[in-house]
Image (cartoon, rainbow, N blue to C red; front, side, top):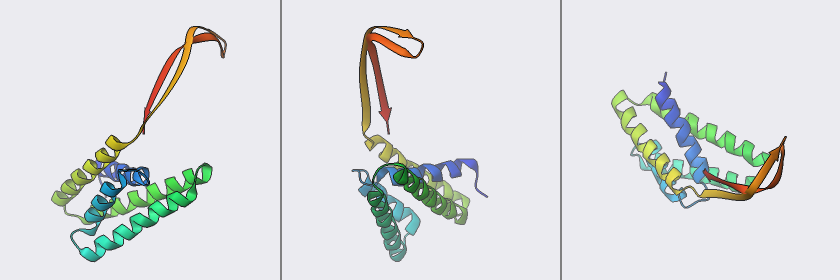
Length: 144
């Protein structure tokens, strides 16, 4: 059974794979995850690259909306499970090394994630019940 920290790393890895698909971060995570899961075997690495390409294709064909969110959740869980299975098979020393490699990939994806910003101006605003009267300033920044 895996410790909670490794499960968290696997979950972050699964999420990063799905998040990176279709972005500039894809090339890095694609090759990194294939290398990690391939464990130095060329044939296994090629098979993982094909699985990753299939994931990207599924995400692209899902489009937007509730159906796309469901596909994203399924694929994130699928990759998390694959990574957990890998951790379970590795000796403790190697687990820590692979976890560090995977964490580095996740951080790369997060660093390349686009920042979304929304700006609303509510100068001299008056808030009554749930209504906004007048104007003021509100800035929201969301890192994804």
